[in-house]
Every structure is written in structure tokens, then in C-alpha cells.
Length: 330
Image (cartoon, rainbow, N blue to C red; front, side, top):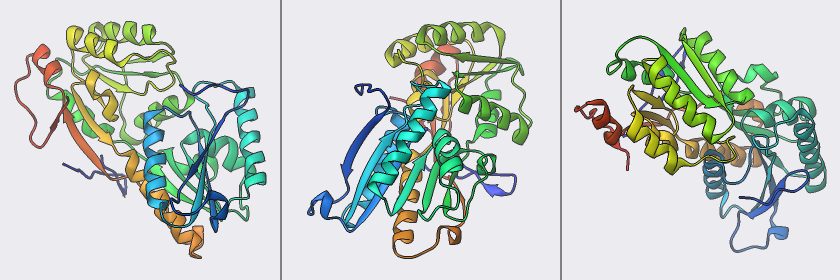
């Protein structure tokens, strides 16, 4: 069942391709009846990450569905910054995105996640004549000077206090750990958890491989009383089946996540909806194509979420009470 959350003045509820030298560009026609070159409007979506990253793939799918049948050609460019995180690679990717913008001449640019905002929108698109609609930008758009006159977007927030509250009901003590991929975005998230919610993590585990994730997960069972599990998209060898077996066999403490695809390794998930962000971006894009100025569309925050409960891990921990309204992890 969908939930809505509130915090600090705004509503908060509840992110393999052949690798080429720069990035991958996929052409995704949003119309079925007309040829792409005959579309009257053009939209270019800049994805900060790579095709196959489940969060972003769902954003694109919802965006494409929202634009379907509207006589719009949609293209998607993947910056691939999780798998190509060096400063030089990211700069090259941003410049390639800019080249494609100049060549494609879109009527609207849409983006997802922080790297596109930081490395493309902020330096190259500020107050441009091309409208920009962003989503997946974590916690605070002003970090990148947004919004500009030509931008609007949905800022992504997470129900971290709600997850921690649920975990505390089953924890043996107060110590909290943070386990995630080692990326700039996740380190930003950690800082905002502390700044916005006053949450202190007693142990942080930033990892870059599946083996390191497993080692950190086992280490956390002995060092903290609760564990927040956030983000694995940057792990090139991530193996969900193997991680699920480990979590089901070795969990000694309650764990929580805000990603649906990590509920298999967590006791509790209060998960965000990437589809909500894709739909919002698509709807804002349609309004702009109808003549509305981006500056007249207020910034929004994601609100949709759903509670998940992993009964297999619960049994390992001796927890018998299934939370009301929770969805079982399959």
C-alpha cells in the first residue's frame, strides 16, 4: 500500500551494454505510428548511469510511457558515471552529451540523478534557451545552483527516519551502520542523513566489489545493531542471488533499505518509486511543450513509497510479527 511521509517543511514519503570509448546512446522512439524523424517535437533524456541500472531503467520506462502517442521523438544518452567514475571519464561523458544536444537540438532535455545535474546542467545549461527537467537529484537541488530560469524538477528524498524507527523495534542496541557502494552520491546521502535528521552512523561501509560487500555485511553483524543497506549499482560484479543467500543465512541484526531490489537482502524496505519520478518528468515535459515556462512549474519531491517485509530474514532473527499493510518479499 502506498505511503506518504513528511519532514522539515516538505512532504516526504516514503535510483550488459557494450562499452564504447565515451558512452552509450540509445534511440528510443516515443511514438508508434509515426517515424521518429517525422516527430514534431524532440526530447533528449540524459541518464547519469548505464542501461541495466534498474532504478534508472524504470525512470526511462515511465518517461517513455508518458510521452507515448504525443508525436515526440525521445532519445536517451547514458553518461555511465557509476562504471566510469574518473574525473576525466565524467568530463568526456558530459562533453559528449553536450555534443549530442547541439546535434539533436531537443525541444526539452530531461535528466536523472546527480552527475548529470552537476557535470552537464550546472556548467553548460544554466539559463539556456532549452528547458531542462531533472529528477533523481538527491536531497537538495541548490547544491548545484538549481533551479535555473530554464529548469524545474523533482528532488529525490528518502524515508530514512521511518526505516530507522522500524529497525529499532527489532534491534538489540542503538548502534547503526551504513552499507553502500562507494560513490560521491552515496557519500552525499550520508551527509544529508546526518544534517537533516540528526542520524549518526556508528560504522560506515563503502564498497566497490561484491566480495567487499559480503565482507562488510558480515562485519556489520558483529559491529552494529542495525544496518542501512543503500545502493549497489556501481558494483561491477554484484550478484543478488549470492547476496540473498548470505543475508538469509547470516543475518544477526535487522537491516533496512529504500530500494525494492534490495529488499531480498534486508529485513525491512520502505521503498521509493522510480516510476513516480519518470511520470512527473514526462508530465512536466508535456506542459513545457505546450508553452508553460519551466520556472512556472514548482520543484517537487517524491512522495510515493511502499513497505516491504522479508519473512525469511525475519525467521532467522526470530521475528514473528508481520507489519500491518506490509508487502511480503518474494
